[in-house]
Length: 640
Image (cartoon, rainbow, N blue to C red; front, side, top):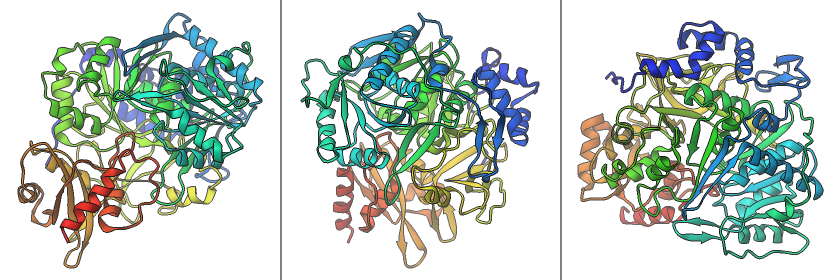
């Protein structure tokens, strides 16, 4: 079945798009031609992209790309000098808003580029005064607030390496990561609000410090008024105390290959993976995706509902500030104290680009259409979406009801190790529901069978055949694990771990993680396809689908369903069978109140499977609702 086009750019969109200007610079007639050239000649594209983004190197690089250590370990802009804090702050209009912020409790703040630069200089001076030097690791355990941006840029400015951490982590998860990198300083908030409750983040960090004596300093940033956090003399500093030690205008002369940030991604088993990114890779890849896919430029007001511990947090700060945009931050639960909070926020702050996840939209959709219509979203130009595959119904609700079929959904898929996207919609191309119009520029993406052969109109592994500026520089202290994870299945080719498909029109679709994919009676299907059918029922809010052992077919399908109305399990089984065929009729439909997710909203199907089959769960540090696992185990007993 051919999926119809849902959105086409009009002449106004085509004219204003930054991608149109880039096409003109490159002398290419359309995106397809530009993309072909960008992967046929990666170095040509990278140079053109750097010129478009006006990235200044001091000294200039001597070689753009060096693959002498193999395609797995490319070196970019070799010999070039670049401190990304300069690219984010220098040459910007001083009075332009750099950051606009709103907290769950209703407070707002705004920092101009001048104010941000001053905060960065003060923070940098304070860090140097307490002994932080080039190469030192500093953990950032802060909610999304203006000071978080200042900390990231101050660390870059002095050549230290930022370790962003999820604000929802417990002390064990934080300690594992700071111990892994040898962090000596950590930034945290006194507390932050979630659904009207105060989360005492400083207390969690104190637990870390009690068992990790190498933590010399804890810097406490005030987030909640009238919340007194315990302070340890000689170790703890307030934000004001740190920033009262003068200003520092100097910039550490870092190279493009100096480490900038280590972002942890939870592993299926074993310890988490620390993705190492450099001054000359992660921010530039993020900024190019932001410019070409999300049309961000000077004065663009971009918001992403995220956390500093997820890749989209640093991506948002570095990318938007490099491009001269305004970072619009919301710190709190996006549906509190009412389910239209996100739309009210976007209205108040005049957001141009609003990034969110399919999980969030699935949670907001049941509250109805009228509540969203109370707010003016006419300034909104684009929705951004990443984190997981879409289901058709919530995609259509966001596009048709909230966006009034005017605002395109820029679907974006890649990851922490990519520095952004492999696949990306953009303002010049037609879009299909839940799909991707194309691969990102400079990304030689493909879909292959189990032998590594390219396939079309069939589901296979998503791979990248050439290096790109933005590849992680490996896992921290684990070179072999990095190689085994991405390069061992198809030598010389990056295997991303997603199942994907390219349809007859050249549009791409993600079908979930390849280790989630289900094969029943010889037919392979992504769980998201079955979940889409289930959530199409009016009584189903959310669903997660896994494969379970079956003596007759090898695997059978089990579905875990959150409902908001009356529906019987057999009715849902028949619905799937009617849509997808009898072989794919679920053997089990279990009703639960919640499905395990990460804190950024990804369904954790591997944990659903582990709980149902009583298997080891592996790393749980990124899980937002551990009680959902216990419920699945409890429900399992009723099926025995």
